Image (cartoon, rainbow, N blue to C red; front, side):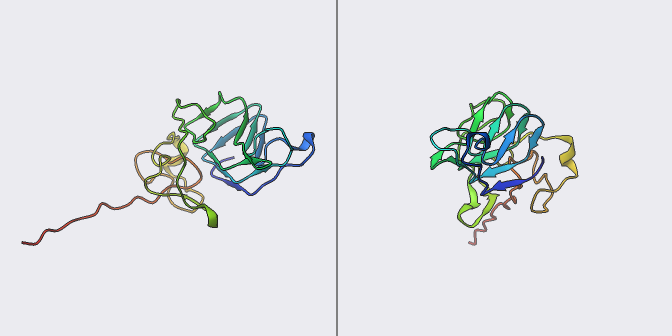
Length: 165
């Protein structure tokens, strides 16, 4: 999957159904994804409110504010195949960051990035991005590198100050 927002999903309450509130991943590629506010309903066990990963690769993703029965639980399974992604569970390196993504207005479902977000201009630049659009319809590249997540932040113009004598 590419350039998708996965939010407000819930896994089942039985063990067989309670893995990965947002994504149960066995193989494949998740790229430029925003995975937020999903819930794994399987009680007492953390099996990835955001992603339960057995295989596959994740890049340029934001995985944040996911839970398992009320407790923060973003990722379960191996963390070795995450690169250029943002989640508190990740180990810094390979472009990964653990800081909060600074969404515009998550309470209202606006998961675009604020201009000063650590996810801005921090993603991996893949060839397909040169002509692609983000989930909101903006060009995938607004600056020199891609942003993490499904949306590109709109660049702020520098302020021009005039001094009158």
